[in-house]
Structures are given as C-alpha cells and as structure tokens.
Length: 426
Image 1 (cartoon, one colour):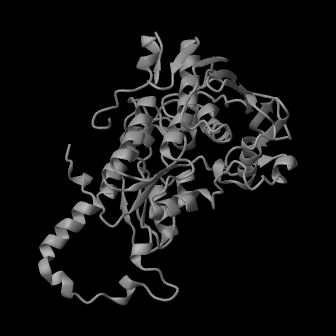
Image 2 (cartoon, rainbow, N blue to C red):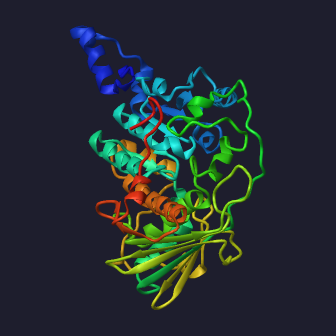
Image 3 (cartoon, rainbow, N blue to C red):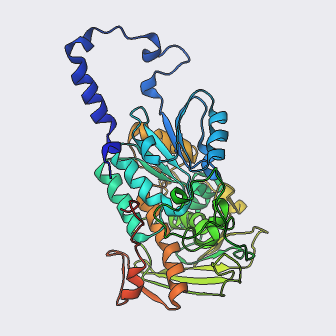
C-alpha cells in the first residue's frame, strides 16, 4: 500500500522551507497571516478535516474552519460541502484527507468499526483527533489508539460529551467530595435494543461506496438495514445500546468514581436471543461488573427501572446516601442536592469543562489532556466490549485490567481483536 499519505505537517514544512532556502527570511508577510483586530491569525485557528459526516459527524462541521471533508456517501459529501461553504477538499478515502498538509485536526464520526484504524492513522499523520464514542470496536484497537496518541504526541478527545455537561460536573463534585459516602454500587439502566424486520440483501445505491463503508469489517452483502444509523444494531459494526448509550452512562460513572485508569476484574452478561430480523443484538441484556481496590460493582440493566422518568441513567449507592444521574450524553441531569452543593475550599477538585468540543480545541492549543482523553475512552469501551463478549460466549469472564486479557480463556481472548480486511488493518 502506498504510504505517501502519512506525510506529516512537520515533514511538509521542513520540505518547503528547504526548497525556499534563505529567501524565506525576506518574504513580505500579508496582513491576513499576522491577523488583525477581530480576526485571528491562521496560527491561532485550528483547521479541521471531518471524516464521516452523515449522522453525528455532521455536528462537527464548521463553516470557515472545515477545510476537508471525507465520506463514502456522495449525498453526505454534497450536504456537508453546502453547509460549510467555500471550496473544501472532498474525498471518499480518509487517507487523502490526512495527506492534506493544512489540516491540523480531524473529527471522526463514522460507524464504530472504523474508529480505531482512522484514529491511529490520523495520529501517525500528525493530526489531533476528536473521535466519536465508543472509542473502539475491539480492545486491541483501543490500546493501539492510546499508544499512537502517546507516540505521536496527539490530543485525542472521545465524544462521550456527558462529562462536559453541568449536571455531570456537579454530580461528580458531589460524589468525589464524599456526600453519599463510600460508593459500593452503580446501577445503570436503559431501554431495550430494537428488533428489526427481515429485509433482503440488494445492490448498494450508486451514491454509496459499500466496500469503503465496510472497510476493516468482514465482507457481507449490502442491506439497507445494516448501513448508516442502523449499524448500531449489528455486532459486527456497532453492538447495541451497551456500546451506544452505555459509552455515555459508563463514562460519567467512571469519571465520578475516578476510575479512568483501571477496569473490572470480572464481567458476566446474560441476554435474550435476537429476533428473526437482520439485527443481531440482544433486545434484553443484564451485565454485572466487579471492581477491586477499591471494591465496588456496576450493573447494566436493559431494560431497567426508569428513575426520575429518564429513559437511561445511573443510580449511585453510597454508605451514607444515594444519587441519581440521568442521561449520560449531552442531556445529563441529576438531583437538586447535587446541583445546589458547593464544596469547601479544600474539597476534591473536579475539572469544569467549557463544553466537550471547546475543551478539545483548548487542549489542542495548550497540549493538556482533555476531559475524555483516549485512555479514559478506551477503558470505558472495554466495559462495553467485554459485556458483549460475555453475552456471545454465555459465560463469566475473569478480566486482568493491567494485561487486558481474559484469564484462562483463549476463545474469549481471540475476540479482543479482529484481523481486518484487505488493506484495512492495524
């Protein structure tokens, strides 16, 4: 495979400087480069490339800032180009976007099975990354994303934006400052996975590059029940509510429990078999996670009892009190006692995000760690992945959160990675 697309901005600048030689010192610098009142200099502007803009990814399009757009669907590309205006670079192969030397950072809003490979390649290309949740499809991919972020000194924010909401911030302060005591249990609830109908396979529409949409996933015929938003209900691409909203609810839980650095020691899932349609995620699912040092447990109940009339969320059980946090994405809520609480001056500090996307932008300039950095995003994705593996195998998993391996279970460990397909692999 041609590796020329991996050229970094540093390589580009060094090459152009060498070609220019000493004459560069005498060039006249236009006013637009230095900036002007009410107009930031280009050095202060983060130039974006957007990969995957059909659904959630379209929220990251920025007129005047998005300079390159990639999507495997012509209709998505057309709408995105119209939205940002100007003359953005358009492509269907994300590597062409990464080869654009003027792109500082990229957003990845593709289906889950693409996140890992695109993020690693973006880091290699010298781009900072905002990747939608869940961070990865496999545990091998997640660890590769963490390693690439470190090796290439890239800022990677995972799109579990609940941590950047006011309610989650106040709930986290309340719990970390001991207002409910030592937490021994977190109960997460959500409604069922949908059950689809049987739809026959067909040829893909001419606007969609089905081969590139599949990418590293195993080959299968096109079906409208598999593509775009429907990918969430297939284990090959998404993985159901546990990997969708679970990545939100559990992100807030890990933040409140200060557990971004670790993982469970055991995972046990049960679930109802899928229906007879195209989708294969279990409609009903229950998972129990056990943690050590400190000792606590978390459960995922699907469906679970709705609290505060919210369709999903979590209840935290301490030895002094309890606290409910509803939602987990951009629509978080919590009880008044947490919203009204003000910690003492010497209380446990909690970072107050200015907004999830803005926090990423700020960190690109300061090079500080974002609120949902890739290590945290990977650790949360591990929970979702192990839950599905336990359901698929029908047994409890004993997990080593340091080595990131299932103890004494070769079959389970084979499911921690995937071979990729063709040129699309780590």
